[in-house]
Image (cartoon, rainbow, N blue to C red):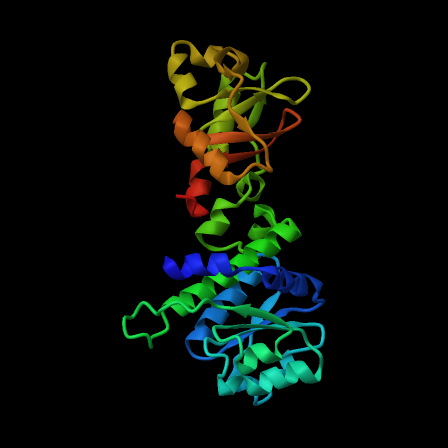
Length: 299
C-alpha cells in the first residue's frame, strides 16, 4: 500500500502527457519489457486492447531479431524497466529514436538510459520491495501494473468507453455473458394467440412452442396478457370451454431487446418466473427463457 500511495502522489503532468501521446497515436501502443517487467507489459497491453486502445506486446529480445518490423511510425511505444538499464531494450529504444516514434518510458531511476531517451518520463517512486531483502520485484511490479491500469482508465474516460464497447472486445467468458443483451439470447419464434382463441387451440400453441407459456395479443398485435401453467391450473374447471382472454393474466412482465440479459435474469429470479416476453412498441418480438440465461453463463 505504501508503494501505491507514493505512486499516486507522484503522478504529475508527465502522466497527462503520456495519455495525450497515446490518444494522438494513429497506430497502436507497443508495450515492451523484459523479465518481470515483460509479464506486466503483456497484461497492460491486454488491458489497453480490451478497453478501446489498440495495443500489442513486443518482446524486446525478439524485436532485435525481426520483430522491430511490428513497430511503425504510426505507433507509440510504452517501455517498462525498473532499472531503466535493461540491455535487451537497447535496439527497441534505438528504433524509436531513429524513426521518431514517441517513447513513453517507465522506470525507477530518473537518470537511466531508458528515461533519458524517452519523450515522456514516468518515474516509479523509490519504494522498498516487499520481499524484505530488496531484490525481488514485488512492490515495483505492483506499482507498474497500477500505473498501466491508471493509463487504461484515463484513456477509457477520454474515449468515452462504455460497457457496450467493452462487450464488443470481450464477448466470451463471464464478463461477456454479463454484458449480453436480451436481443442476443431471445427466441424470435414467439408463442402468441388472440383473446378470442379457444383454449383448445391455445393449449396446442403452448405445447408446440415448448416454452410452457403463450402470449395473448389484441387486434393490433400488442401484448396484453400471458397464459402460464398457473393460469391453466386456476381455470381447470371447464378450461376447454373458455377462450384465451378469459384465462390469461393481464399486464405481464416484459423486457426490451436492448436491456442487459442480466437484468432479465434478475427479474425472473425476483418474480419466480421462467420466461419474459420481449417487446418493442408493445408488440412481442421475442421470448427469453431462464434456460437461455443459464446456457449463456449468467449464473
